[in-house]
Length: 340
Image (cartoon, rainbow, N blue to C red):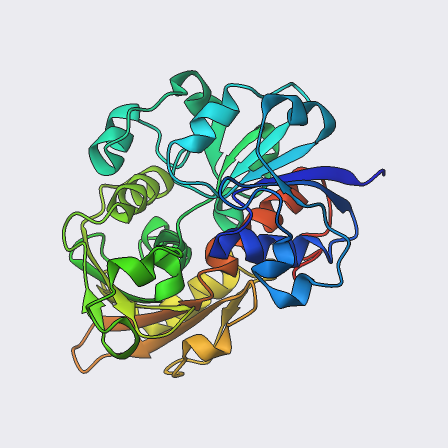
């Protein structure tokens, strides 16, 4: 098969740079265009020195004509921008979006959480919320791919199979997540200029964080149940990584072994989900620079209550790596191609 021609729009953000670093080592693709706004005319190596010796095009401004020459468009742009590009697509184009533009199935929900009017409503039903380990082959039917958010990825991977199989209660689930500050984008340094970003831990978005919407949507739709949860995100004084701690109760007489066996069976053919021995302590350091999701099931001092630890790299499994994983599924490549 001839190599896929790739366009990356939003190439200089944290996610965009990570995406390029992975794509340059993918045997089945060629990066044809890198697009940006304030970075036009610059080399991408200015944003990451490891790209200095790679043969990559200079950054140009995106325009519709470029779509004729590419197979896959990756968009790592501010929310609302992928809507515009989706309305320009040719039949041979596949759009893989890393923003929130195609994560939600209702335009009204998108407006509620993002305060942006959805400008590509006709394409909502042509898109899929593409969590690879859950959606699998369903992804192949779509040309517009909405990649999940980083926090939801860390929470949905352990929760969906356990609720679906009636192992844990669908009520009173607590999701406590801590993320490196790269998850807030390059602008985080200005936003937290006077808040001691590098030495403090901050809770934010209580009750109203945008990722509540997609966690709720996917838990309900994939399990067929109305799931009740509380989600609290935290910004941590580290650059990358997410550690999510989930507190849950088992249904009836299920034990920690029921949780373990259900997850192992559900993910037995999944390369990137790693289930450790029960009561294992994990850290973000265990997953940095990988596309892995590490899971550990721990006992609580309370009977029938358990703690699930989930660790991912927010820039890879929570972003660029998952996007490439979806591309691999779409084009029948090995799912781990370019992601070792």
